[in-house]
Amino acid sequence: MMRWAALLIVSAAVTAAMNFFDIPAALLLGPLLTGIAAALAGVEMRIKPAVAIGSQGMIGCMVAAMITAKVGQVLAAHGLALVLIAILSLATSLTLGWASSRSGAMPGTSAIWAFSPGAAPVMVTMALEAGDDARIVAFMQYLRILLVALIAISSTHFLAGDIAAPPARHWLDLPEAWGIFEAITVAGVGAWIGYKSHFPGGAFLVPALGGGLLQATGVISLELPLPLLALSYAAIGWQIGLSFTLQAIRHCARILPVALAGLLILIAAAAGFALAASWLLEIDRISTFLATCPGGLDTVLIISASVRADMDFVLTAQLARFFVTIVVAPPVAKLIADRIAVQGD
Image 1: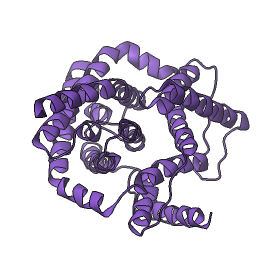
Image 2 (image 1 turned 90 degrees about the vertical axis):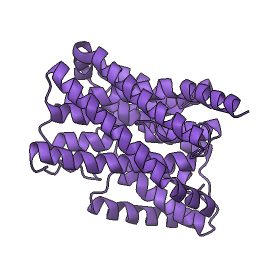
Image 3 (image 1 turned 60 degrees about the vertical axis):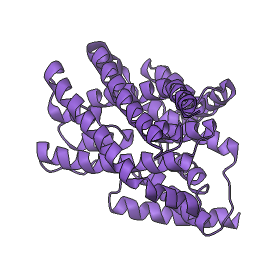
Image 4 (image 1 turned 120 degrees about the horizontal axis):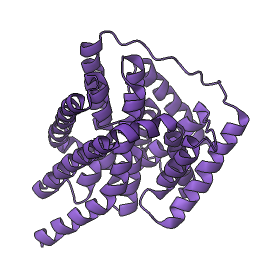
C-alpha cells in the first residue's frame, strides 16, 4: 500500500509540473513517466485487471459525455465528407505502419497500433490484448500527441493570432450527484459488457457508443468529476509505464528517427485533407485543420476552445475519425500482420 501511495504522490507532482508548463495529455503522461521511472528502479507493481477495465470504461464515458444533439446535426450536413476524411487518415496511418513493419523498424502489428491517428489509450489497450509490444505503441502514440499539440498551437496562432487560455475547471468543482451516478453506471456496466464480449477495446467502446447514444438523445446527462477521470487516466498510464524495461527504452530510442518521419508524414497528410475540406465544405481553415488533426481529442478540443474554431464541427470530425479508427483498425491490423508473416515465411 505504501508503494502505491508513493506512486500516486509522485505522479500527482509530475502531472502538476507538466500542467504548469502546459504540456499536453499531462494526466496520462505524468503517471506514465512515473511508472517508467519506478519500473526502471526495480519496483515491481501491476495494475489489477478490474481496475484497468474500469478505467477504460471511464475514458469511454468521457467521450460519450461530449456527444450532443449538435453532433448529429453536423453529421447530417457533412457526415459523408467526415467519414471519408477519417478513412483517408486511417489508410495513411496503416500504410505507414505496413511500411515500418516491412522495413523491420517495428515488429508486426505493433506498427499498426503505433501509427493509428488517434484513440491513444484504446490503441495501447488493443495492443496489450493482441499480445503486441504496448510499450512501443505507447511511445509512438504520445509522441504523436505531443507533435500534434505543438504544430496545432503554432499553426492556429499563425492563422488566428494569440491563443487565449481556456476557462479552467477547478478540481473541487463537483457535478450533480445524479450525473455522477449515471456516469459511473454507464462506465461500469458498459466496460463489463465490452470486456465479456471479447471485442478489441470493448471495455472502452461500449461505454463510449452506448453512453454517447443515451447522452445525445437526452436520456441521461453524464457528469464526470475531474479527480475520478484523472485516476482513470493514471491507472492506464501506470499499466503502461510499469511494464517498461531498460531494453524497451533503448529500442524506443532506436526507432525515434522512423517514428518522427512517419508521424510528420501523417500530420502533413492531415493538413492536406484540411485544405481540401475547407474548399469543399466552405468552412474556415482553422476549423478544418483542427478537425483533421490526428489527435489527441482532448488536446485538440482545448485548442479549438481557445481560437475562432467551429467547436461542433471539430468535435464531430474528431469523433468520426476516432470511431472509424477503433472499429476498422483491429481487423485490418490483424490482416496486415498475417500478410507480413506469410511474406516473411
